[in-house]
Amino acid sequence: MKILIADDEMVGRRVLAKQLEGWGHEVLIAKDGQEAFELFQKHNARMVITDWMMPNLDGPGLCAKIRESEAEGEGENLCFVILLTSKESSEDLACGMEAGANDFITKPFHPLELKARMANGERILTLQSELQRQKDEATHLARTDALTQLMNRRAMLDTMRLDEDRMRRERRPQGMIMIDIDHFKAVNDNYGHGVGDMVLKGAAECFAATIRGGDYVGRWGGEEFLIALPGADIIQCAEVAERCRQQLASMRFTTDHGQTVQVTASFGTASAEGTERAELLDLVEQADRALYWAKDSGRDRVKIYVASADPNRK
Image (tube, rainbow, N blue to C red; front, side, top):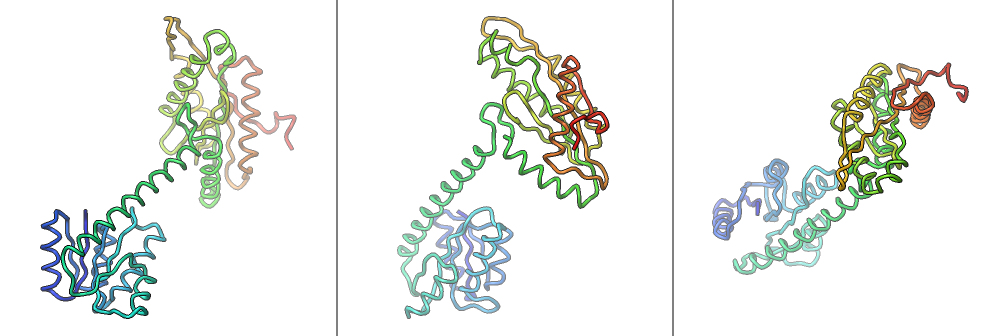
């Protein structure tokens, strides 16, 4: 484990560092609280053992700055802080804990006491890491389509709203492509849902591999996909859609019985440009209208949303 020592007494910090290195830890050393905080930010130490009384920034002050940086998300992991102190009053100890210390040891102390308290800190850090892993996994599952591993509708909307604000500030266009796998129900009916799932996963991989850097694709629902293209005008949207259409049409899917399945898709594109901004859901609806025109025109094609051609335009 990477451990940061903060102590203004040279002999004390050297003795402690030698002890920790003997226990197999990687040790960082600082002579005061300010230097310790700078090392903490740079090296992301998992445990800090700090003296209470130090120049520039004392132990409780260091604790407070570490907790503040954690709250702002500057560290990759939480840190366990042990205060070394000769103070024994309840008020002083409460002050240290309120500043953010996890534990304290009264000086002088036996190395075995320090080792035991460090072991307790390691257990807490392990539990915190596991809890964070589970939270991250839950967040991922809540935002990811289980079948295709693409973003789901909720994640797409959240991400597109962030891009919408950014594109408005930068006065750049925002493009959308709505996609529907042609005759997908027939695939399920003729070959089974397992093959249908294979087609959806293959289509997802195809679209993700074909879009531009900075674009992103999600499963919108059923056999529908949505591609968001930050900064793309309508021509660029149509070009990306056509590449996706051609790539998907060239793919072949083989069933467990050796049958070959080929699918196509229909694409609707829309883009809001310049100062004439459409609201996000209006832009999605425009791409969906263009998709309807593509399907109505015979499928396996790309259609561009043109406001003057939309009888349902508000």
